[in-house]
Image (cartoon, rainbow, N blue to C red; front, side, top):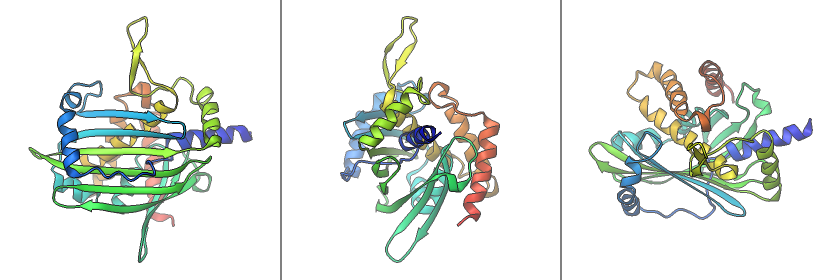
Amino acid sequence: MAWLTRLWLAGIAFSSAGLAFSPVPDTQSAASLHAKYASLAERLHHNPFRRTLSLDSSESSNDLKGDIYALVNYPFPTVSAALDGPEQWCDVLILHINTKYCRATTDESTTALAVSIGKKTPQPLKAAYPIEFSYRVAAATAKYLDIQLDAQDGPLSTRNYRIQLQAVPVGNGQTFLHLTYSYDYGMAGRLAMKTYLATLGSGKVGFTQTGRQSSGQPEHVGGMRGVVERNTMRYYLAIDAYLGALATAPPLQLQKRLQSWFSATEQYPRQLREVDRAAYMDMKRSEYLRQQTSQ
């Protein structure tokens, strides 16, 4: 059964462990993010996602990266206040189906998120994989927000994890977001992922259209780019669900976030369907309670 455990960790490492980023810092400024918004006008409003969103991914010999650019109908001050805090990010991350736990801690010099990732079904916390992300506010002004989460190591030789969210106001009570998700991997990770994609992950695809089948149905990217695209979308939908619940009364916000995240993933069943709504809701309520009480 050891090989099944390795495959399970491979799937987690490449499909959920990593809100992650390139080790090279992203120095994109507010001005360049505004320029990107202008250049993506057509793609934001004409795409297969049924929302104002653009998704890109890339793969090299040792890293994967996903980028989502999205226009959201929330004023920039609301977005900035909602996402400029480590505890809020734990409430975002727990929405992902593989996130089992998140706890923010702060000492004199650093803020960290202790995150545990695991299966898509209920699981004891001790059986999940722990990853510690450093949390940093790179910029938080009236016109620009830049939040970065970084982790040095993950399972199966994965490393240099980062999550980065950038945001700028664009008028009409709207905000333009850029979410990046990336990580590096070594030989052990690549070999484990090849095995995962040939077995437990076979048949799964991402969002980028690569052609059309003889029936006329679209073909989508698979492999490791498919993995990074699916999870870039999962994390973006978690951010959107969190923002969308802010107007709800606080005692009802968790229920609203969970319902919204699941409903959003169901718009893309080919890529994101894993469990039914009742199973997801029950699991996440339990995990959220554990997150509030476990140290």
